[in-house]
Amino acid sequence: MGRKGIVFKGSTLMMLDSNKILKSSCRKKIIKILHRKKRLSIMEIVQGINSTYNEVNRNLIILEREGIILQQFLGRRRIIQLNFENKKTMPLVEIIKTLDSLYKKNKMQ
Image 1: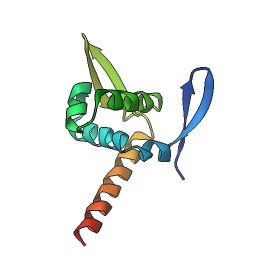
Image 2: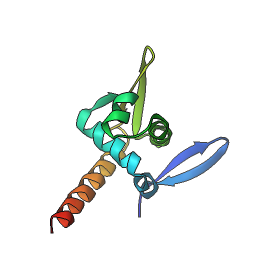
Image 3: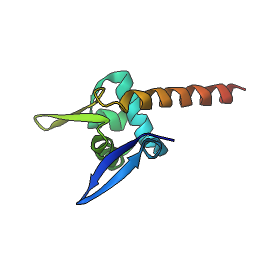
Image 4: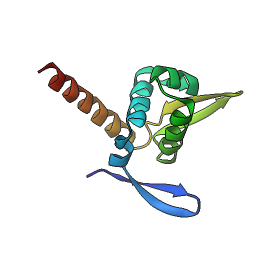
């Protein structure tokens, strides 16, 4: 079971489970690259995970609502980083690293 967080969608309050965060391969890739590189612009993320701007932006909105990432604007540039003050961030990073290592182990067998 995942930990629950609160997401505001319009005026409706709904719960978003950490498992749902991990269901998107794009979100997993974003978390992984931000953990490795610390701070990136949205275009660096798009290029780094080989995705589209719209897909990355849609997933950044979800991660920001969950408090997993922080965004800062430097002029017109959006700089994104993981929010390690959120209790959910480090467990998500660890889960993704564990899943990756299990996948690599299974792939080698």
